[in-house]
Amino acid sequence: MVNTNTLAQLAEQLGLGDYLYLGKGIAKGGGRNLKSLLANAFEAVLGAVFLDAGYDAAYHYYLNRYRALPSPIRDENFKGRLQQVAQERFGETPVYDSEGARVGQHREYTSVVFAGAQPLGTGHGVSKQEAEQDAARAALESLLGSTTEAPAAKTAKTRSRRAPRKKRETPPSEPSPAEPSALETVPAEVVPLHAMAEEPVAPAPRSRQFGEPIE
Image 1 (cartoon, rainbow, N blue to C red):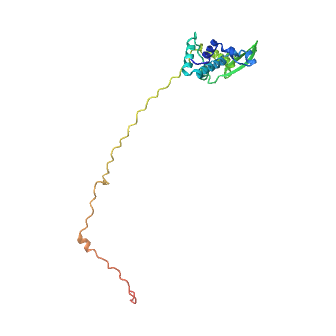
Image 2 (tube, rainbow, N blue to C red):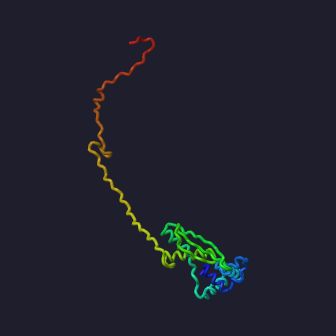
Image 3 (cartoon, one colour):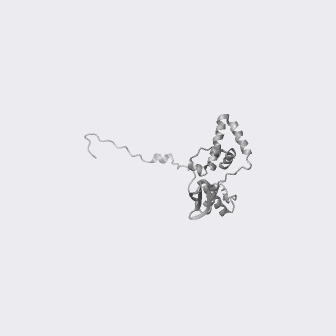
């Protein structure tokens, strides 16, 4: 509903091009028919309705004008679609070479679009932007055969989900027969009391008194 072409068409219905205050150069070059200027003029009128009467009045005013259009024009973004196609096919971003020339009392632009060193299409228009859009449209028709054909979408690869790993079960270690386990108690060696009593006890050394001979 809201794009440059539709707004320009609504401005043409109101004849807003005749009320634009333009310089002599752009007026002689067909500036009153530029879609960008006409769209801006209609937006200014819609803004004035909003400031004067509020949102509801501006909304219904635009909606009624839009419904009165015989066939609303789609705003085709040929440059954006061409960039996607050129990057997929050539790995290059389109580059536009545009030049303007005066044709009688009007100024006309010619644009050639390239992908690398290869020209893809040529377009014309009363503004540089329109010429580039026309060149992109011609390039899409040359590459795809139609501007309505959309480039093939890349199929996304589905990744299978990996199953969770099972924890490795380690068998319980059995104690070796040579070494007793921690739970088993080793009996202590029993020494009889009479054997302990029979052992001779060495007498404790006596300290030598002063004056005693050395043995």
